[in-house]
Length: 271
Image (cartoon, rainbow, N blue to C red; front, side, top):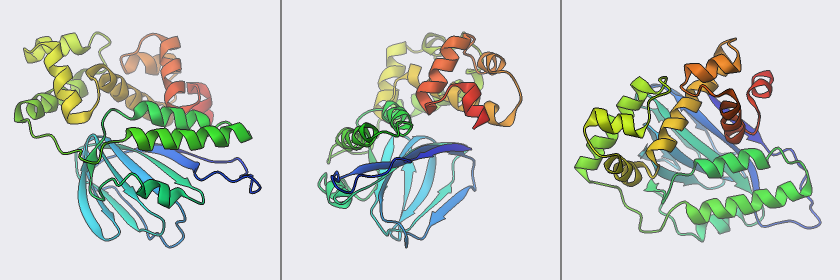
């Protein structure tokens, strides 16, 4: 299950920009799901960010595991293969091109192995979903700026994995608890803290370190991923889906879906 949106605007060749946002999307998959591209006709750069779960990513014949909170990228003509090996994995991606796209990406000197983003990147992908619906020349300019901001924000050159075992276990427990309880509208960070017998700030610190995401944002993201699947796979009304995923306010639910995908629930389903 996933969603993608591609650039529809025509590039003004008389006044080219160094980079252009080409496409963005997300994908949620179960173990055994695979995807590959031989790279032969790939004239763009791309970036993956894993929100939860993990997968085996092979880029330019180098295989590695991309874990939650980590980033990995590819350059033009580089082949890639993705194999999901966790119970459930959600990753976001963007592609971008332009006369200086490859040089621009290389200038950040990010490692060619997975590295942790400095913060949760969901809002950046949400912005790019919205930008790609803008078919004006200004939309192209905004897209270029959005790619620039993402690459600046994505991480530092010395980013390293987190090895705090206590935080790792607390994060694992919180993720499992959220999976079991997100449909309950009363489930929140306070409820999780009470069940796990820790202070809510401990959960916040653990998720910030392990996933670069706040507990509240993680809960909302899980609810929205469930909602999107129901929008595609059922005929339930949006208001019914909102209740089923723990967001009983239909107006707030519609706002969240539009922020994530660029479309309100009814238009998303029609498309």
